[in-house]
Image (cartoon, rainbow, N blue to C red; front, side):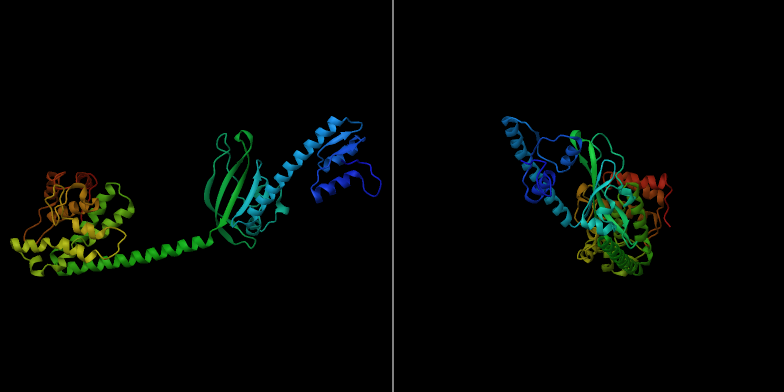
Length: 396
């Protein structure tokens, strides 16, 4: 209990401030003074009660009880604020808090370092003065917007542009109305550098892989000049069909590579059989049929990003199980293999072979139409027919 008028060099207001701030003891003013000037000075010390003389015992008791309760709550709040401030100061992200008007009321040390501005110099300033592009957008709806994460950039004190990842979250008061926002951001320079290096590595790997595929395709064509370009044309048609069917670009790239080497197993077939001008014997034809299995055996140990070996293995399978080498049916055949199968039939029938003249594209399209749903995947056939009849697709 503190009187305001005291003997000595300091009055009760100064003493009350010291007792509370240094020792955490709540102070209740017990005084006869209630003038405007005294009240204004007393308010500054945030007293826990102000009782005018004369007073009764019940009033004093109630005020003291409330003072203890308020002091306890104040102490708990201060401890929580100190704990939160310590946490925000020690985390590895920059943190800036703004009020409902977008004015800065908190920055942790990392945010100060990244922006080159101290909290004391920006307190109460608009966030746009510090990070022009990072002010939260107008609140969406009555709940004051939603948390969102995005990438952006800021300039450090030396003018260097720093890529950052930022999360903006609304602060809600009573009634869920937004009372401000918290911007949490981190320097992602190293992550961006790593992403660039990974992309370059992927591109180098892709280029090396494409070169390997091309070399394998050329090896087959050098042994079988009559079918030179067959694999490339099948690959081109396969990709066009896959695109017409709406397959994603990455999957189409796998189909392209599989199409480029789908006959790699023919390296096992004697050249005289591949280039024989007459009708093949049953034994010769059975040797040619081994190329799907041989192709799979050649490719199965290579870790492609796509199931290239399986596509090569299955490109002579048929929907009704009449194909080879395993007599697979329907959905058991990879979609990519079903696409290559249709493209392979169309290209082979429309092109010249040592043992027969070209049948022409019309005959080839009639063949897949007759086999639609029975031998060949129905959706693939439809896409292929649309390519030729509606889109004007032609082999080079």
